[in-house]
Image (cartoon, rainbow, N blue to C red; front, side, top):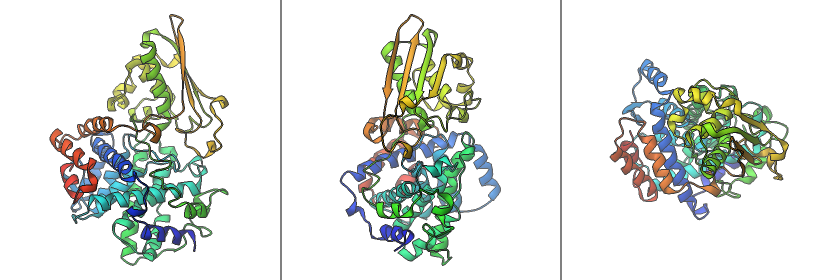
Length: 461
């Protein structure tokens, strides 16, 4: 049996009973986080042009666009919700892909429900299957796919959305294979667009494409049924010499991604590669009691490849600031905390930020590589370790090593921290009252017992 067929059979035959203990709790935390970041996207830079796009389409449809009160066709709702979810770079991270699969999965699932009842248990099951398939596709493709310039959220998380949809709607294996064949010709996303609105659009496109591929396959549309393993297929075209679809097929459920390595939930609304440096600066700021005026210099040592996606040394927009290591360090020094505002145009352009840049030395060094044999397979934000060293004008200095970012599976955010993030994000959607946000959060936290997920989307619509 080829890899495509093996993946399809896995989706059909795997159920919640096969998941390791604790999987539901882990999944629900990320689902709660993803609903939050979709709401936050309502006031992001992408919102206004997406609104104009929706109005120009002049289409009708009943699929909800969260936080707006608007509805659209399923494909357009998937596009917009998926783009909202990644618009602030505040959504989850699955380093083994490396990608942000959850906004893709949730946007696709919500758009597909068509008002029909879907239990919380079924929603969780579909979500975990989506994460599993996408994660193992990333494992088989290897990190070289990302290094070539592809944004895996667009190219690989597409299969996360597809797998989740196939599970929720109980597709049979041959139909799933056709959907995968269709999706293989829809995968897209280039890293050159990082720092622009098109980066989060990759998430929306993946959600829409996964839904379109599934709906076409269900309608009888045909495609190659061996798209993953075939010559001129997905792995041979999008991958490298080391890419192997059998690694994907043989790794499914061994172990489940939701359990190991797990999914990271972001504490800061910016590129994951900046999270360890930010954590280091904030920890030293609290420990040493400094402010911007007392700092002589900050040295940040990154592992090789750790700055690969941090392409803006002097950002001029909030979006660029999310991919700027000097800005992230400077904002930590100046403010001592981060919020959604920290990555606004106003925040990035502050003269007090610019005054700090010459005191910051951020560079990659082989000394931060560590001894991890999986180093080359890890993403920019999880490989090696980071060291931050602060020198003060009064002669004091201190440094810290950070191996694991906050919010990663081994440093998971608490429910209290998630609640704070959820409510902060919900405030960015003016139509959503604090009471509705509180009620939705409480329902999501108990998602296993929710009879119909539509009751939650209605509260957040």
